[in-house]
Length: 158
Image 1 (cartoon, rainbow, N blue to C red):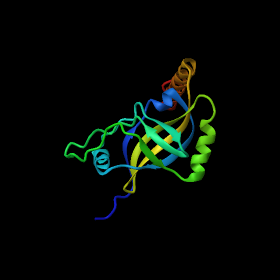
Image 2: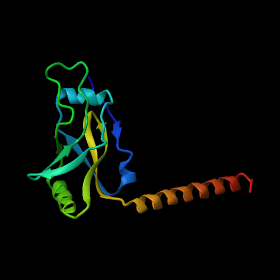
Image 3: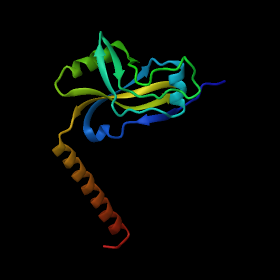
Image 4: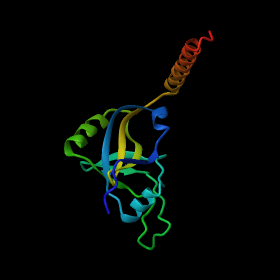
């Protein structure tokens, strides 16, 4: 059977861009068991409490919830186990250099299948304060209002 081509999104962390300022993004593979892959292919995963952490020169993903595979047997996986991420050595060193700063964290942005391999997109992020969130919402509303006005003007309504 040929390997599937393209990119199939499994789960995305929509609140990450609201809660954090993302400075850099990285693509990493994940070390998974068979039932985890089957559960991901069924589109079941949650990135709500997940975060990346460095330990012993490697990056691990904590808090990622992949529910047990429904047709699995005693070989089923633990839903919230710690998963190792597969990155190149220079990417790990670059990430660890950035993570040493205060307030910087590693946030998973999405999980997807790229050409048949399970991947996670990680963002190096700094938490936003509540006034930053309000400012972003005000900018978004202003852009919407400008686009509406331009649309009305293009239609000749005012």
